[in-house]
Length: 88
Image 1 (spheres, rainbow, N blue to C red):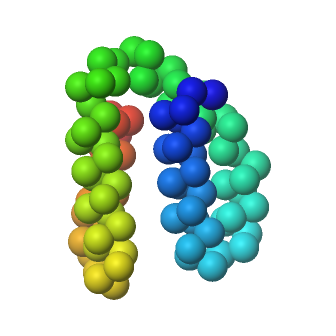
Image 2: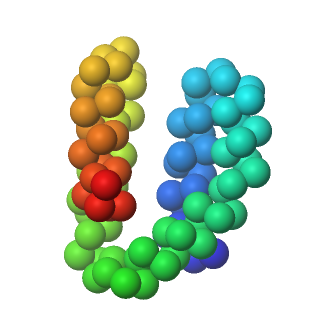
């Protein structure tokens, strides 16, 4: 796993852990290596240096929305992030 994907996995795991949902946290722990491999693949296929700043800003926006307690904003940011990164 690259440093970038390890950081991405750590970020996602921290978000899940912060939810307090122990079952979801266990699922995330079980799949985090697979997610890291997927991130490695996705980053190899793209110009990582070009997309990294946007990904970091999207994660910061997500954290700001969570800190404000705005579920609607967090959901909007997360949907846009997933759509952009994963093409969903």
